[in-house]
Length: 576
Ligand SMILES: C[S@@+](CC[C@H](N)C(=O)[O-])C[C@H]1O[C@@H](n2cnc3c(N)ncnc32)[C@H](O)[C@@H]1O
Ligand SMILES: [Zn+2]
Image 1: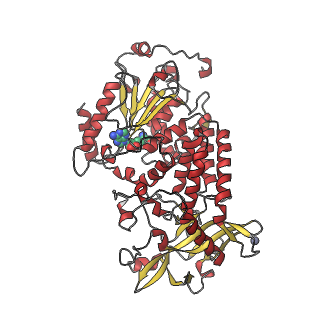
Image 2: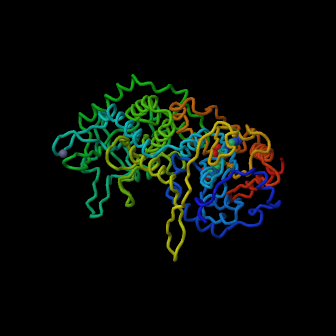
Image 3: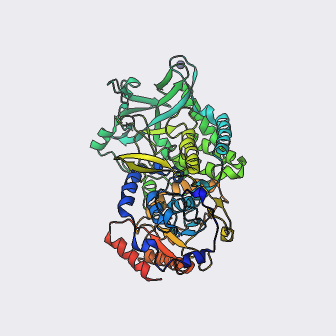
């Protein structure tokens, strides 16, 4: 029977579950083998399997298919329990008190549940609100077109160069920089590689074509250019070699521009006087910008961000060139005038783009795989410091990586279309095939109190909250399905600050920004060794309070290989 043929009533759920004996299906059975096959496949391509949960960077995401399998075991109607049948949790209340990337919420809403999601970090809250909201994809296209049109009107002139063949104005795609280092009593420039672009025919583009004697001159300064191999051999790392007294963006010197001429296509060129003038002009214009002072962007030297502080980088805004800051300043003022329903996803899109538009972006020029692509800031789940930095043009018209247009197409438009008709994969004759699930959608309606759940399905209530204290009455949740943090994963919360400070500036009133890493269950603090157990046990105890009886269940996944982590988890479960 198809879901459309079933008339959906909203019976008193207490009665519905009262018919069920004390055991839920999940108490006895979980299709481990099937779940493993699918989630293994998904884990390599999460953004393709579940595009609508990939709006913004989040760490430690789980496979949606695993959670779908879990939730399907909670479906009362046996005919709807199969993974590929639609719905089955209409009107049931599912809570994830530590929602992170929102996997539980998305999977549960697809099955018709009303969902409650909390996270101590504001980013998951914004992401869940934006990705679950019911906004027509074409409404988003119109809003984005207007937004980027106005951004281009105001900022494109900072990304203009001239074609070396015909002299016509041409768009910059990106600018490459080399890093200045101190070496044997003078300054040198270091790049990752002299190869700018590998070609399959062997005619690689080399830096030597532009600088035959490997000497760079910029604003009356001169440098010899060395490569990473040389720097490594001579151990050119650390205080003795780095120019720690000047801002990080000034430690880099522009060496090459990739431009695009309408008549002659793409070209590389050495920056000429006009290009240098543009860079100087951005510095002057930036003086009139409204970017907040360093207080908002202050770096607190956490487990990962201490690598920035060690390089004398004290504020997250310092990780952006004047041109990138100008772009962010214009984007923020346009965001203020955008219609309210579009503000959150637009802000998240801008925040997502930071990862591809910072001085910490590297260049994969010499790599055989995808030569010329950007190495985004967190490609190694930590801060890395490239020798060759890539300053992208986020407004570039071409379909290259990290542009606002490309990010909009993949993270917003494709995701919104998928949400209207989610697709699942299955194996047929040893090959993977796709199927669209009829009558399912990964879209809900936001409500401001859970009283609105009554007689409705697919409602969502999400808040920034420390879940050791749940703002919920007793016995209001049918199932808690969650995935607690690592024992030692405080680094993710630290890394997220790269985005969080900008989002706070973009959306000051949208969530509670008083986020205290200390309250999070993510790690035992140096002050208090029991902190993880304590925070987590408070959360479990709150789950216990809000669960309905007798059918209520707490279900969670845990993904760690260290016995210690499991021991702490077990202890936390004993407290409540
Ligand atoms: C492992 S992640 C969840 C990942 C999620 N299931 C997914 O698939 O993306 C754990 C989450 O717990 C959140 N968290 C940690 N301590 C918390 C607390 N005290 N209250 C609420 N959320 C908390 C973290 O911010 C993090 O987002
Ligand atoms: Zn030309």
